Length: 287
Image 1 (cartoon, rainbow, N blue to C red):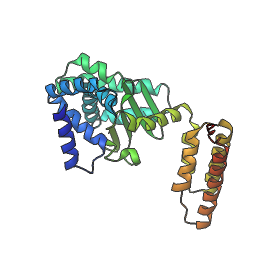
Image 2 (image 1 turned 120 degrees about the vertical axis):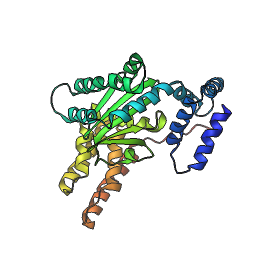
Image 3 (image 1 turned 180 degrees about the vertical axis):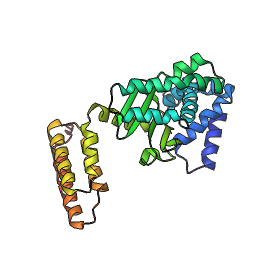
Image 4 (image 1 turned 90 degrees about the horizontal axis):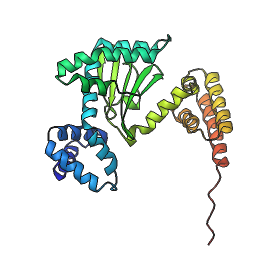
């Protein structure tokens, strides 16, 4: 185990600009090439499972083969016409888009297995084993639930889509013309909240609708969206996504008219202050 940990620490020392999830992906490939070191690391982590971060890394190592296989497959698919077909089905308003997406992926499994010289049954089971597909905001997000909280996620979207999750620190990206496939580095706690957000947006289209209005250049649309978020936050109670969108409007909405910007900021600040005041303060324990 020490050899594997020293290798990871040395790699990160030589590449301090990399996010820890990028370093872990490098470590997985190192362990994949050194089976004896992998077995030792799993055995050692299993005996110290209560150490900070040990349980998540242990589960990741146990799913290493599946993670690397999925990474290879989606980098391969992301350069093919299949990527464009998947995104087309995801954006299409026709019937059963998720079924069409699954069918499009299934058509490429055999070709990938042959080119990679991997057993078809193994490839079929892993590649077609995804459970969740989230459609919205002009993208298709596919999530593989590998082991408890360990997830492998990929996103197909137009190349022009830029956000925090499209950075090199978050994913490896490949292109097919104007379609980009993002293969996310993290499989655990770092990406969990983003996946929860995808689930919430898929369950309630309200968030996507309001999010689009919040970035409008029309002040009246922005103001109406803020009012809807205020009403929702007040009446629904525990709604962290509405509050997150309000904070986003406070910090990221801009207009050339300083007076309009100030008006939006004051409106959002007042709503957030009201929300803070409604949160009950913790009771003090009696001495």
